[in-house]
Image 1 (tube, each protein chain N blue to C red):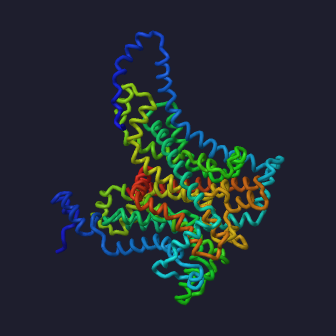
Image 2: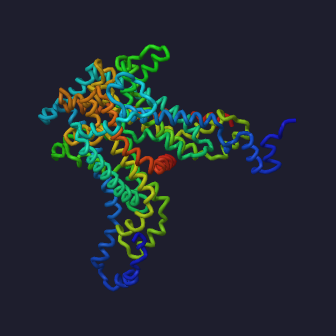
Image 3: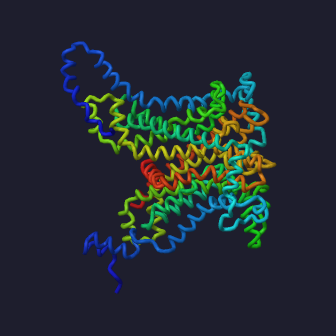
Length: 301
Length: 333
């Protein structure tokens, strides 16, 4: 005789027992077996290897790379030497690194401040046209702004900003994604009672924002800052057009390495490593927040 | 210092009496009222300002530039009507760029989405060290597209590349990653997939975790296996997220620039422009030899219209699929 079906167990012994039986027979909560972990390990290797490959080439030298396109599995000892050559090359490495830090930090900071302000307004304040305006903000996410680069470039040259960092910072000072993100977060994380209590206590609007909304927004603000920082650091097309090689960000500078030293892959890859390492370190420290950020944003989006 | 919120209660009680005493509203009250009325608009203003300057205005102004002679250095010339559009559309190079863009876009988004769903399903299991695996999958996302392109261009090098060497090692012919159009599209799509698959995986994983567990239990009780659960419960429940992922990857994919630009040292999309994309063509028209902002703008607008058209198509298709699904459910009773 076969075991009773789970439906029968549910009827006779209740849903708890049915759930337990389902789990025993391969239900939703069972621990996965080694096949799953093997598969995940393969996925992980595919994610990591290209980055490791860059480190391998960056720690080798041009002659070795030319002789054998398949690098050894462990890095050779020339990484620091190659990094020094990147710094000494004519791509203005320190300046580019400084520019990337300035642009990414300024963008992240201003996106967080302005998005939190707007998000707080949309989530907790009542004003005429709130609904349509929020819909408009969300709709703008579908507008590919990259296609407006010709007039944007014209505007920047009129302002005399071509080659200057504000040409990259200002257009990215607040994003539709950021506004939407903070609206979603604050509408759940910040109780109306708290806002009203502050108002009753005589706080002005901006004081209420600063002392009530800002602290409540902190976790979401951290994630938004991280996202914006990564996005800004890895951005290429617009900085490439408007900054050019005289005052480059790091991605623009690294790209110059390939144009000028196209046979010396140890040097090019050292540049790649130098441009990538700062973000990998940030990721190692705060990556779990980035992960939860994507996961949260997606549930709501 | 952060918890100073309830600190200034002292002036509050005096305020209602003050209002009554003053009779005609004092300046203080009027300011407070303005504060309440206008602050919300003030707080959302930065977004609308930046969007107006960096988003809306450029798109509209692009249309204006596209019907004029306009030179990178010389500036605005005369009105030429649709001449720029005609020039662009009759150039074989534009059609090549359009073909390449679609080819790369399909080669990247279709496999990427399939792999992302599968990996998300694997990650959806009751894993040990969840965060570790999720972070591992997301790692490529922090590598700049330019860096990804430089790494993969070396891997896909025709003569001295890792991949062709491995292919030769197992007795296969090397592939002309830079000479054959389709092969070059595959190589560039691989770069895109490397960077974005993990990101989309996590978005889909989040949607999967929001699927009520009861549905799976019900499916198990009805005798559904893992695959059947996945196809009949997970995938239908993911539909809104799938639409979101498809639309964002369409917008990004049709504007691709960084990866194909870095695929060789010249950045022109190959000798026969076999991997030149529309955005690369736009750049070449505007900032290359021609320096024609008019034609570059025409390309931008054509691409914009294509993106809008595909967006609407996506929307219509998914609605149709959704209503078809509802109809079968209704029909089955």
